[in-house]
Image (cartoon, rainbow, N blue to C red; front, top):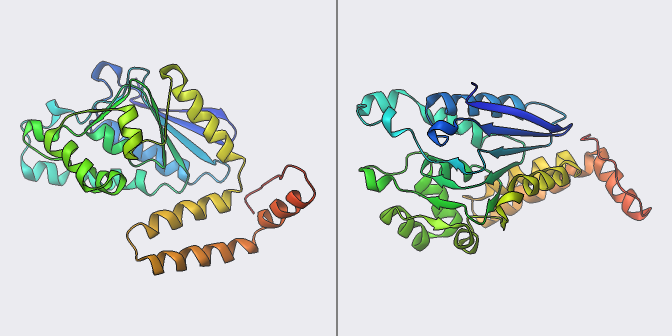
Length: 256
């Protein structure tokens, strides 16, 4: 059984699904490698416009595979170079929507934070429990969480290892929206299809500039935004979008 599978619900949208239900989608090296492989491939498809990342109906991903880590040495963990696999997810140029049902704990929470939008079910929960087993987050948990929710909320989650419910995660800024459990994937796909209707070049520039500007000064971020804004006036989609607006019709964007 493939531990990571790709589905194609429509021409411009793909689903990457973690498929290890017997282990609650625990993130072993096979799952991490599968995610990296599919994100790298899909990120280069010119006709693909959005990716939905999901797990099962009961669990998104319950964290790293502790059985695979318990007796490893520091050197063995270092030589895995798992940061290169995570970086492939982070570097995906396509918008990524995480559809989170159930547990997004440990590495699962870190993986969700690699997405650009998080849609969570009402019974979903988010947690960084690494401190409870003698370690700390190692795939961005201390850095992405702090940037998402701020120092004081992040410190509480990281130092206690306690989970938070979807509604609290939303109030903290960790989740984009919360929906009924049975609607999580449908809502994520609805957003993906909506994004797929938008001009691909503008979407790509928005994602790139927002992420590049996160840790830059405001002045630098505004410069990046301004240059990208100006560049888009060289696209056919800009002309199509503005003329469609003036002509009161729906635009047809081609990514050119």
